[in-house]
Length: 507
Image 1 (cartoon, one colour):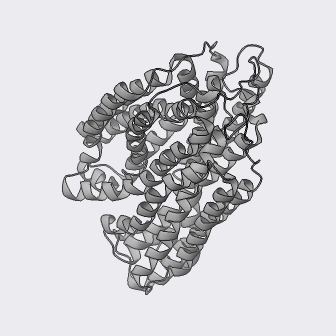
Image 2 (spheres, rainbow, N blue to C red):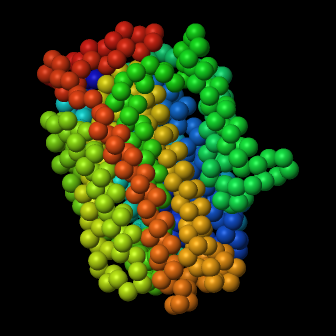
Image 3 (tube, helix red, strand yellow):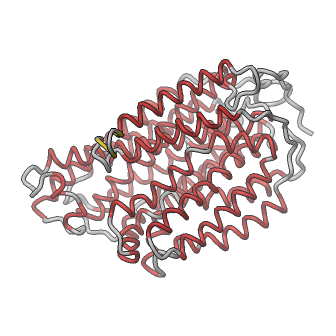
């Protein structure tokens, strides 16, 4: 931990940019119909507006986390913020969908540069026994941003036009840059020999894996072009990543991914946990929003507002939970939060009928708020508690990469399951599942199909509910943090090539 006189202003400065980039993972979803209309394009092209961002965001995270260790997290954060803000301007000014997709790639790259630096700075400027409160703010930001995105997107699209979901980032980015320049400290850097083979292997492997999963549904999990198939890309990606891990294991120099990080049980388990969270948070909203809009006839803004109890409760409680986990074993809070999320999703599934009073859905939404408050901060604190400063960026990159891969898996899996359940529950619809899709009816589903459609959405939401229960089971195996020299955690585990770092005493 580095001696920083005013860590809280630094944290709040970073939160602004972090909130902005996370909102952009979900804000576009409600604008897709307007983008299709405004740019005169089709659904397959407009899906790439989101896919390109997620792909460019997920693939470089391992590398950008390591760059923060080498050149300083403040420099990398500011550079990423500039790239993201300028790309947002380019997005808003795009005159065709191809230009918009290119701008979204650049925007995703900016987000990938920024994200690992936020966790790395928190890890290095807050002592372990106060890091929980800081991670509570970080966790509240992550949780609330995923919910605010659709709400803010609906309001901006309805009021000003789809371009403004990107233009809104420009003043936020400028303010965020000024605050980060002023309050985020310039932390010491650590000399690293950059692992070029590791960079290439990780980038290629993650690209093939994420692209294959993300686009599987688009190509019906079959042939993409010539001999190239979706499953071929996924298998090739996994094979390249296996080679990457072996290279990291036997590399005699300094590896891109220090495998010694995974000797810490809590770091390894927290990465599994955040993967299930990324999967679930991405997956559950799609069937829920489809049900609200297609069956109940809510507008995009109205359907997003159904999640307000979740956002308000999560945002209010997350800092409180952050303070509590500095004094108690975080595994109980994490497991409770994950179980509550599963309960809320199963509850939503049971309520999904055409005649259910719409206000009843606010109750599981509130439970999701309590769940979110108990998930993000304890998981991130558990993952980073024992990270030595020179590996903070690498550890943060791994953690955020697993979260993004979980999100991509959730997006692909829920799309396949929705199609399957629609085919099963609406066999009489013209064209089977295709005829029953929301797009086929322009969002106006015949009333005779409401019950079947509701059942299909309710069944689909059970998948993320089951996955998050797996995360709860994993959380029960977290090791209890040890208190050493007045801190809430013991010394960081030794990493290959460096001496163990003892905990510093608070000033």
